[in-house]
Length: 209
Image (cartoon, rainbow, N blue to C red; front, side):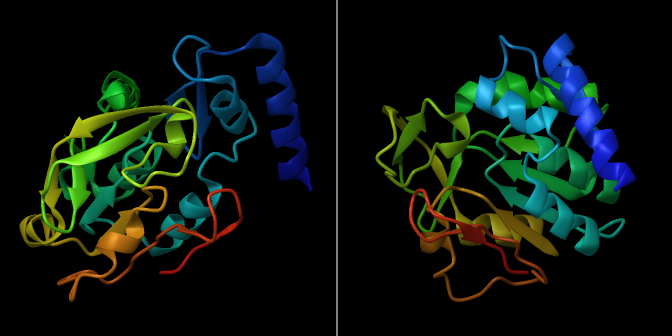
């Protein structure tokens, strides 16, 4: 109850004073109006941004575990993993190059530098049409019929990066494109796979690990 009250007070303070950064479980994130859209800023203010994924990772990540993330978003999960496992043990891939400066600035804010690759990940390494949504956290190589525009992006072959990074933990949050990647025959050294499964583009999610 006390924790809930404290979070509520912090949320009210943030909405009133519009801080340029927020801290969620020790990870600092840029929340300035000109850097993040209002809906994302509100999730940060309420400390519920990526809360399901965050809570699972806090249980399974161990120091020195190797982490591969597909779908960096604004860099929160990669920074959290780097803080726990060490930045040299975390590699993260993001197809939406428009997020590059925000991701890197969030990493710098936390004095962390996990390995960032600005490419999509596919089963075969083909060039793909990437649907860059106005709602940045809904962008995907999977066409979810969301307002935005389409660009062509390079990808890397999934099996190649599994061989290269040999992760213990594989994190996927690519808004529906997980279906293609989960069909490969093997995942090598991977022990845990937190993955977002969309029943529909707007319905609930569930996680597995």
